[in-house]
Length: 83
Image (tube, rainbow, N blue to C red; front, side, top):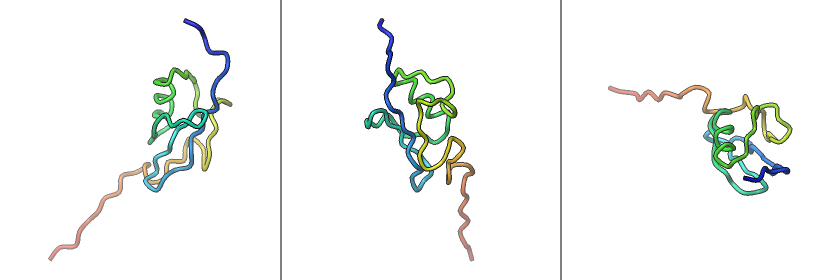
């Protein structure tokens, strides 16, 4: 099995309104992540083994770093008003 010598340009895009982030490689969407671990799994499934997605130069984080997941960090509870 041949090994890849070049890695595609991987981008973790800015958070969407729900806090999720799209992950692309060379402009192709690989998936949507809700956490840093999701990014690693998406890349693994695409046969792009990156050991540290937070600090590897192969991964470009746009609109915030690996700790920025607004809207997904804590669940929001809605309480209705009752009689």
